[in-house]
Amino acid sequence: MKWKLALISLVGLHASLAMANYEKGVDEYQRGNFASAIYEWRQSAEQGDAPSQFRLAEMYARGQGTRQNPEKARKWYRLAADGGHVPAQMKLAEQYLADNGDSADPGMAARWYQQAAEQGEAKAQFQLALLYLEGKGVEQNDAEAAKWLEAAAKQDVVAAQNNLGSFYENGRGVEQDHAEAIKWYRQAAQAGDAYAQNNLGAMYAQGKGVDSNHAWAVFWFAMSAQQGNDVAAENIASSLEHLQAKDVRVETANIRAGNSTDHDIIAKVRQGDTLRILGSSDGWSQVYLPQQGGLGWVSSSLLE
Image (cartoon, one colour):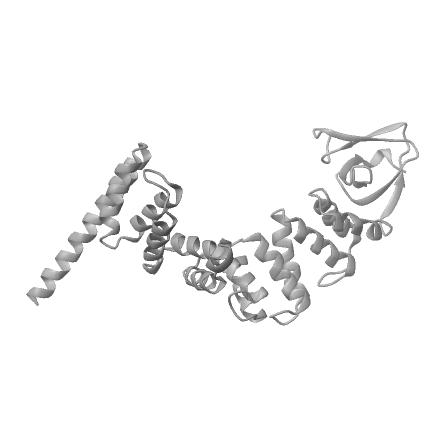
């Protein structure tokens, strides 16, 4: 029993020393003393401290305080990754995918993404899903892709949310569920993803998972088109014809960015111009502007 207690105390001492070296290394690095930082991190890295091993790898990879040395960098990344260090696991995975020729190894990339993903790293979950989707480094498996997409989507990875929406829309790797597709498309669309905005617009236009609503379809198509999505821009026309049309009844009318005169004027329209109406609020009508390819607001009193 005494030997065990002595061993535990010794392990605790090593851990404290490693932490001290790591923190000294951080201080030296922040002061710009890169060589000193390397010295401190090497002491704790050789004692098996994963954060120090990762920091040391970064220094060799960047050539800070020492000559750039990819082989030494990978050695220390690997040791840190074996110790469960998620950033090191991510770095190795990225390197195995980015390498050219014989050094590329998608299987190893998948291995490290898997380890990081299982520790809850959202980016690793998304990348692992893509590997399963493409059958790259792993056997192609839609169900596994959907599983990891959902894990990443729940951690607000926007691209994962859009892809998961597509899986549910098409019944790929999951049971087809248009309402669930709408849910994930909407989350990604509201976060600003142009692809999800277009996909959500298409669901409204087709009445999939929701009642058909061409006003919402145009809204989301326009939001996507403003980010340069040409497909969304082309989709607008088929929904516009379903919207109510009103003519401008005054000589000129200001189109504003919001539904009050406090908002900037973004365009002007003339008497007789026809506007397509998405909806109205507080005496203002939201309209689609073909020339700008976007949306604006006009006082409803100026229309007939």
